[in-house]
Image 1 (cartoon, rainbow, N blue to C red):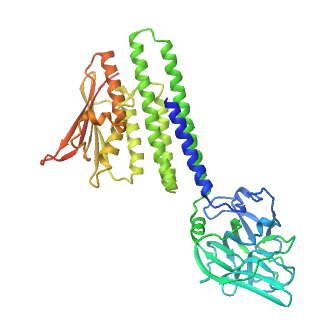
Image 2 (tube, rainbow, N blue to C red):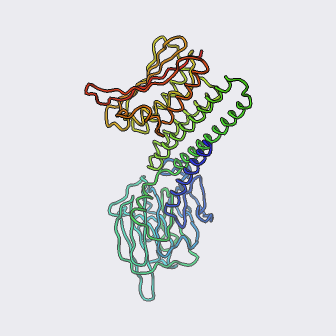
Image 3 (spheres, rainbow, N blue to C red):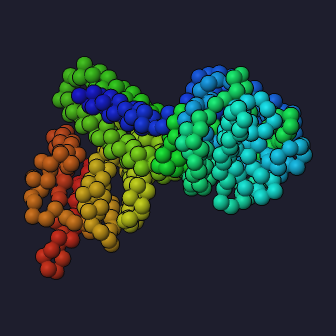
Length: 498
């Protein structure tokens, strides 16, 4: 049953990311140059890179952008594919210009990208992106030559660009208009009123004018070129500009999938162990131990599901930094749980470390909106005392989620351990949250969100039968001087297993 639920959760996460990918704008051509990938990532067609070197991209990823040296022998040929030359299109790319290059002849501009409409020396740009080295303004031009006339339409940026800085430039055009965006901001839109045509067999060139009369070159880096066969909207262009580092996003997704797969393996192994325990069940004590293992197997998926939901919410909110931090903390916590899974009991020191790490990842998710403390009596040897595992964490989880988070301010959580006698340990989990109002303990326990408390009750009952001691859990509603709810106090009596 729990394996089936875990698999459903796994495929649900995959469907979320698949859905997001399907909703993304689909380019007709894409060139990321990551790790020197010299190809169109949509069609697989190879490109020709001449006299360029790999360099860091705008995120600092090594070997993920091409560097152009500002010479006639430094350029990239993207090819002649018609998908690079749409009639109505959008050209999106990132560039960083290191120097203005005055070498060459012809027009006063350093070419970033260009493809031609005819083979002549003037009015030859089907679409282009150039930096004027006199004004340092970016310009885009589209032209068409007809018998007896030459037509040209273009847009310039509002302000000069700065050297050694990454920019996102977008050119949009159709039969009616041509527009340019810089870092997501529209620079201008002008009337075009002619169809863009392309010179048959001509290539799309980066970093070189590819023209005898106007021979100019580009010095700097170019990266993440995407060509679309339609005019993108302002919202789509903003999304391209604000896109996060794909290397980190992919790493987070891969880590999440790995954690889910690990969780599936954990549950499968635990179910296999339980099956073997049933075969070995010859005495009543073995029956009790087997049932307690079943409870623990139910608790682990419960905890993993909640943690995965937290990571999923970070990613869906595009908060990749916190998702990355959360995954690191959660993976360390998961490793601790895995290392203790083969044991029915763990040291109190280990339990406190697990609780601390768990509270830390919850504090990260909820922006450190509550304070907490874990206190032990001075005479407790936390390394020498062993207790049943996974009894305290679900109560702490309930205190945070259902006690503290609905409260707006001044939220605190306290966990205290004290020895009652040589065989009995008390753990008190206390919060100053919203409390349970007028609901009884039985009503709360019957709710699905407090299903974990049922597991704890059951395990403690099994321990009472096995060791004949007074183990149990007590839930106390706290009130202030006006009889208003002041939080919840939970007392768990645990066996000390040296």
